[in-house]
Image (cartoon, rainbow, N blue to C red; front, side):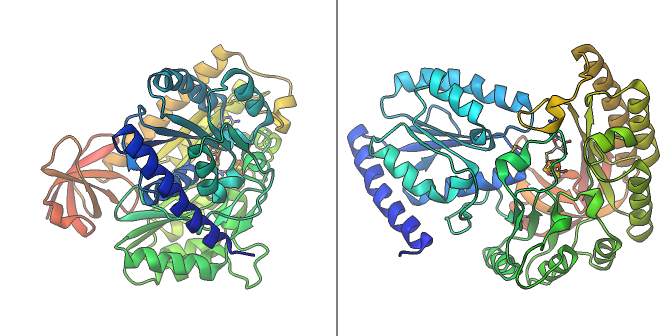
Length: 465
Ligand code: SAH
Ligand code: SF4
Ligand code: F3S
């Protein structure tokens, strides 16, 4: 039997042939546009979609009036789904105008039976639908669609293969995500990710390190290790390797200046990881540690496996070992049964920890999750009111923390030329804050010492020193 990679590359050749044929027929290049709706992992998958299409000879465009539009969907909250349905209405109109246009949907939302049913019934103009576990088959699926064999619908309910051998292009020149694991086994009671991304699987450390070495050889300076719960990396591997070990080995790869990782789960975060961060300046001074709620009762019902006290102890330990570290978090308001007192506990933790930033969400019931069956849903009104009060505290703490660095000189990785003002470069601090500063494009990809003259809330204005 042929290797998957061999099949993928042969199919890409065949599809390139089809693309040439279609371009000649329509008298212009065959264009495509990939729209990403989800998290970092979803965005990383989009890099593969783009890599495959570019190697087929398609031309990328930012306009959704392209010959092929792919929506890489997310279903973590209902509003993510609604955005996709909204988009489809518009794309239908484009399709009516362009007889060559093909429309594809993929990503987490496609792993839901209900969604597929709705698409079949109400959106029959979609040409290709595939799920998260079918990504490695993308070249073959596209080839079928190009040959007019649509609509093609292929959803696997579990992972047979990963898509790591597909060609890929990076969204950023100097930084790249690297998958270290797939899926999730935590089953937080509100969360749909384990159902749409499948069981937790870790990639072999050797394979991950080889990928980082290859990225470094291509000029990448910063990598982000990706997984839903990186702290549990390594389970089930033949050659054991823990996450702190992996992080340390990744930091030793020549040419890599910075390493980030996402996401950590408080239940699996240990002091070993904190010590590895403390001892290695290449590991960024930023930890994203989702709290979700400050109430023990809500945390228990969320199936998070930690208490407020445990979370606070982790923060204390971490700040003792890595004092300069920035802490960010995720918060959900309005989990079923959340009382005003529960909510006050969340606010109290925010005041105590003083996060550098937080992503805040209103609880959204997800199909098949245990929380969907809980009673005590909150009204829109209460949810919105708590959300706004939460956001106020988050913003105030974030601005205060940002101000602490004003006037200081820090190291910035120059990542891109500023979109609004070409004389400015844009980069990030080790703690992930954005900085704009005057500079020449020749500095891109290098670490620069920058004085943070002014904190603007979400970013700094600085100058090289
Ligand atoms: N694996 C990561 C997060 C993945 S989803 C982790 O555990 O931290 C990103 C965030 O979306 C979660 O941290 C949570 O805050 C939020 N989220 C997930 N499901 C949600 C739901 N049903 N309603 C509202 N927010 C949700
Ligand atoms: Fe969802 Fe929890 Fe897994 Fe994160 S750890 S992806 S919140 S189930
Ligand atoms: Fe969304 Fe899937 Fe990521 S549901 S948050 S794109 S893993």
